[in-house]
Amino acid sequence: PDWYLPAIRVLGGYRRRKLAFRPTSIVNTSAMSYGSLSSAAVEAINRGATLAGAMQNTGEGGISNHHRMGGDIIWQIGTGYFGARDELGKFSMARVLESVGSAKVRAIEIKLSQGAKPGLGGVLPAAKITPEIAKIRGIPMGRDCISPAGHTAFTDVSSMLDFIEGLADATGLPVGIKSAVGDLGFWRSLADLIEKTGRAPDFITIDGGEGGTGAAPLVFTDHVALPFKLGFTQVYKIFAERGITDRVVFIGSGKLGFPENGLLALAMGCDMLNVAREAMMAIGCIQAQRCHTGHCPTGVATQNKWLVRGLDPTLKAARLANYLMTLRKDLLQLSNAIGHVHPSLVPLDAIELVDSNTQTRSAREAFGYQDGWGLPPEMEVLLHRNDMTSRRAS
Image (cartoon, rainbow, N blue to C red; front, side, top):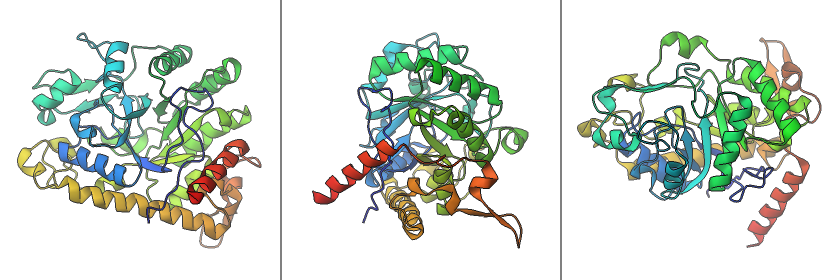
């Protein structure tokens, strides 16, 4: 069985996007770029996600032919605007429409930062840049590819919302943001504008400080950005206090690839989960920690053709699909054991956190949630139940 477990929430539902949809998998693969990963690894993830009915996030490196293996993708646009830039490196809506029309893009994610290195932007070492990658990204060979720390297409929260609406209007797709959590002032400003104006990102991906990367200073990977549990709950409470959690779909990432962590994240208010580290391990990563050198021994994070040949995308796709389906199975079985038909319906009261060998307290108390926080809107729950009933009948 494929352990069918769709999300309850609809991406783009609140803003009535033309191409709004309910994801068929509550678990999807997180952002990993072609360039950071090899062509065979990207292909394996796309094929594996397809087998499991899940989606692949492209990462900020643009859309390659290796993303076009039949799988649905979430196209991530970072500060470098790869795949969405003109000859001068500036954002181009014409290039966006060209890229969206060339692949099975289901949604667009604007990357503000990532948990592993917030405030730094991104870097692809020169050793990993091939002619194909240079063409896709629109960058020169022989030099590190640097994504700046900030965006140039918008400058503040209000102009970011304008940018989101412009993308959504032009493409019809749900458009969201991805960010680590640091200064809560940004999130308060965003929530206030959503409440007052009705403009909103269709989804928000919160990336915990536990998130991984192949290239970043150690002090950033270890000490910058809040860990997922703290960061997500702080942001969620800002939205819940204003009564606007129904306007945004929340996605969590940052070591959520084990069922107990995933279920807690869903109970905290995540509507979907993204996994990267576990997906890489499913396709062969042995955590050799050579990502930045271009000499990954298993062919996952290298552009060395000889090493890449050791990764069979067809075989690894099946293993990734098995992992995704098993995680969904575990999440479903855990929620059923608690008495709920879907893991998104599990309340925080049902989870106890162990503080010591002899002390526990409820997750709701630990995170300071009010009654009903963390649960999806009732109307969307009813629609989900109708969809599941129709699926069983057919």
